[in-house]
Image 1 (cartoon, helix red, strand yellow):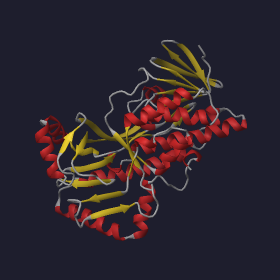
Image 2 (spheres, helix red, strand yellow):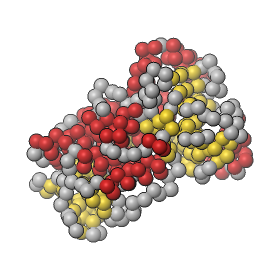
Image 3 (tube, rainbow, N blue to C red):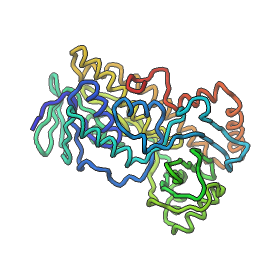
Image 4 (tube, helix red, strand yellow):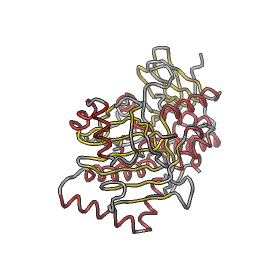
Length: 392
């Protein structure tokens, strides 16, 4: 068994798999570790992929085209879809600028296939990571199958990251006392590629289009209310949901179990320490209102790959040179998006009359302010001042 690598990655979720492919594409030899056998799991969620994320997967040779539902229109309203209090983004000027929706299982299947085809990546799964130690020039990871060594260790092991805790990297955390209920629907009427988010009493309801006449529902609100909706029988749940959606998709059926997830804002105080770097939920977890959580993690992967590529091409130590700009680069992006989603979350379900009126007025004014609206659309597409090379 090979035990020496350039990079060790702990965690084989969507961001961990993408990070492995991005680093391998940049010339590194990668070991991918996970406590469970590699597989699709039971994730019934879908993700909105920004235009830059779609380019990342295209550049890495991850074939997902047939599983994508392009977003043709994006609508945020305070009320029904035809409410005057709305913010609308159309896809008429730049096809694909609003991104696309994909089921997480379809994305993971494509990533696993590409990993299996990549000789520079060696998976170790299932495997248990017990500890790690930094030494001069490398890092040693102790597992239940022996020692593995590398120049760089990347933590992609989720928001409860064992690697982050063991490395002594602290985080700032805010619990919303809120949850998201997620399920997938089949429906009578076509969605026409519309991604719609409605501000409702106590939270927000997002309807994300999937291929065919299917959509994913992400209903965010106070934990007690979400748990109550999750416990309803299907007929009562669909009746309640149809009322909140104004019935615009016609008759509906659930095609996936209803699952709820606790919501929090959590950002690591630093994104690397020594020879350890954090990506994805190990580095940050934000409110799902803007649908940008996965895109944020994918930008981590692409940014890290830029540093790896430079290190390999110049013959420098990957565990040092690859991280020179990583912390600053990812901190700016993460904290600005985290603040934006936090403000949105704090005001989306506020039922006070004054706050509600300001929110509705803000949507209407932004919809008419072309420069501001254009800036928001650019941010949603993942286009910042600097874009990692693999996302261009």
